[in-house]
Length: 386
Image (cartoon, rainbow, N blue to C red; front, side):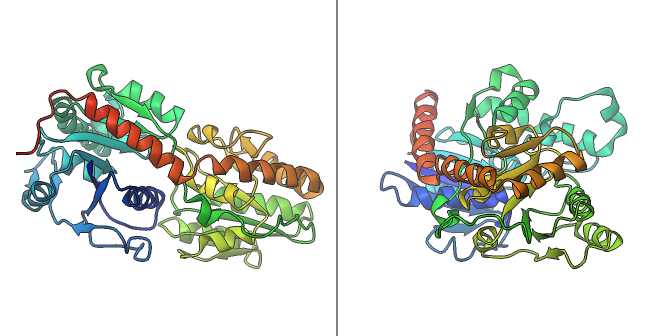
């Protein structure tokens, strides 16, 4: 079986990480040949990709609702014709646009829905007065006929995502498969013994891009609440992004500079997780939450805002807590409950550790290969490469 994975870039983010983890795991399987096609030469995972067959492709397709659309698929077509894949497994939207521009009857197509793709939202009257939404609708209009032609398959990562795509995709192309995302469990699992929480100093950690949706400013308010409750707390942020400056400014305004650390993008996330007590997550919407599993593998209980997709990951009261809205007091009190009850912290930590093990990438890829086989069999119109 020959599988081409296509992604825009290899920036350090969740979708890129799971794509690389999948390719590395499939690379170990003697029945699968993998090619990773990257549409930008940025690669922040040099060490993790050193064993992979990677090609960088400059082809681009940019639909335009107002001007002339840009279409250049020549390099992409050459790569596909040289490799002759059975399956094209695409990641993120611009890879989606490119890979469906030229449809090969020899190929079965699979879209990896890392999030509830905003371009697929249903059109409403209000969209007429919003340039961004109008553009997104046009891009959806551009793609849907192509999905129908290629009998496209969609791989969703949570129950929330499945419900979303059932609403926004036309019924004739709803070939939807649910497969929860996975992590490299061996990389993130805590190697040493369980580390009891020490009320003398509580270490919180958050990992992710600084965006409005990730909502890290909320966590600054939580730390401020904890300090007022006389909890000696430290919060480490790992990541970067456009909202980072605003979050830093808020920490200064709240006079929390000594308690908040901004470490930026790091290569050894697992080391920071292993040195922490509780993982805190503030995303307003979360399609799944890979980082939650990584934290659990490091024996960290998770306290998170309910982002819908992470309901499949955080089992309330078992491996962490979900907070229904942006309630600083409720969020802070859950942290305090773990600080004051070491046995509770230990139980949630143990449950988190064992729960994360079920999402190891090796188990995931066994299920993924079965999906590959089923969609190949389920595509009777597929031709053989000549």
